[in-house]
Length: 224
Image 1 (cartoon, rainbow, N blue to C red):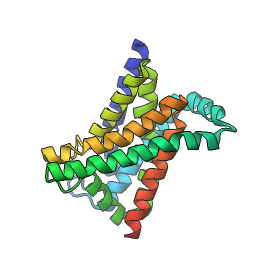
Image 2: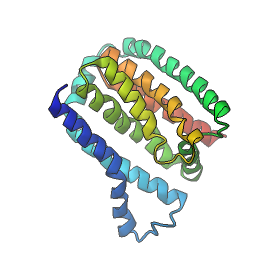
Image 3: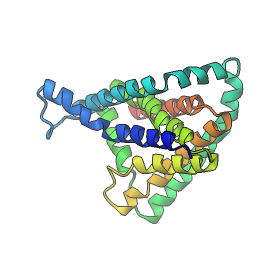
């Protein structure tokens, strides 16, 4: 393992985790009540933090992203077809494990999912931008690009990337063992993203499928 790249991973992961505190800047500037935020304000603050994170990550990985894009030139359809099987596998495993967690732990859904649905209901356009476009880029650069760079053993990259991705979607919102166990379905989706990036040695496929996945889900919630 390259120690410098591993330290870089730790730094990037810390930025990802603590970027939420930058939300206090607009809270202060616009005199918001931090203890009594509306759903619209929460969505705005989340988008602000994600945009700041995106700017940081694009600055760090700008050259790599250009290299990845050039690598895909003329091979977009092939890359889509090669990655689609992993996405479909991830959706299947996500549905199966989601049902298993619900039945075994008598849980009624992921707390993170409910929070996102509430934010979509209050600010659909902001959430389409935030969850559908911005978050997939930042999450894939953190959980796939940074992890892929740090672990020469690609199987270890796939497993660690998937597990940490899943855990980060429940660790701050879980209120019981049942809601915590929803990290498994999230990990299955993360597994599919990691597998497609491993095969292509490129983070752009997972960014595309993650954006497509989240955007479709946001639109479905908006339509219901």
